[in-house]
Amino acid sequence: MDMIKEALPTTLDLYHLPLSSPNPIIRIADFGCSTGLTPIQAIETIVQCLLDLIKPIKEPRFRTLEFQAIFSDLPTNDFNTLFTNHLPVRRCYYAMAAPGSFHGRLLPTASLHFAYSSCALHWLSRVPQEILDKSSRAWNGERIYYVNSPAGVVGAYSAQFGRDMEMFLSARAEEMVSEGLIFMVVPGEPDLVHDSQTTLGSELELLGSCLVDMANEGIISKAKVESFNLPIYFPSEKELKQVISRNEFFHIERIQTLSHLKMHVAFPTPESRSLCLRVALEGLLCHHFGNELIIDDLFHRYSLKVAKSLFFLKPESHESISFSVVLKRKKSEENM
Image 1: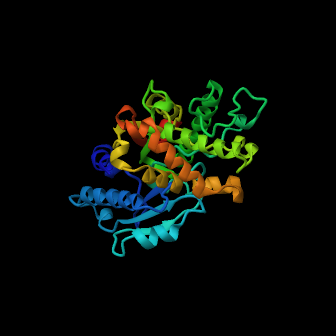
Image 2 (image 1 turned 60 degrees about the vertical axis):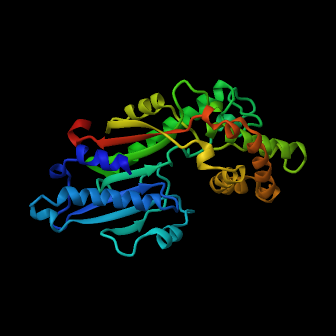
Image 3 (image 1 turned 45 degrees about the horizontal axis):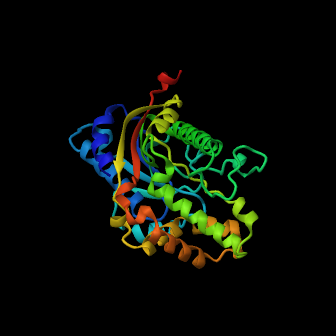
């Protein structure tokens, strides 16, 4: 939320922000909202910052200004839980849901003023198809992720991330008004650091090894393991900047690297680490393996391996980061 509080007053020109007339509405959307409290907090932070900026302005159009909050995620997201558990009864905005993939259009043309997305854009729209092809140099074998994989696999993931970010930004460019803002938090990895040295890379590699163990024991089929890969990619700062810069519709206002809590602070036990990963991935695993996979067994094995792993025993040797990014929609004439 600090990103919003710091960036919004310095990057927004309220006098030039396009508003409808005679009943002006500011629309704010969270893309990849999930079911937690964070999207509600982000929307309320943006609204409160805007109210603080508007308060000293005497123009009549700001006296009748209304706010609309749009919470967007895949249709399978539990919007009932989001709204029932976290949406305040008393609020100064109207709330709605917009189910669908954020890799495509979800809102009308030039209707959105502010967009927010936290820890969602590392999810790819699909697994790179070449890594599932045994005849391809990018085939990933029994690995479920690109950690310690051949360069062709890493390249395929990187290319897919680039295509997905371009789709996300192009869709938002059509939906956003001139000089609208996007606030993004994108999980990533440090430049010049190998994936296996990061907590996220290490834990996903461990999970893959548990699936291989179960296949070797005949609990699940080897073919199922070979055809399962996680649609997740963590870019470096350099890579993220390059992808954004290729898009012609947005200026990069700021980008900042955020370091996160060490693993022993955030997850004091192997079981708590296992539970966190299970919440994130259980749906994907069950969809792919069906009844063949015993989820309890998988994550019990994972907990045992975490307890013996270097990234849990010596978390100070690993780094987990994300990038805080603020983008501004270019004026229409800049795209001509």
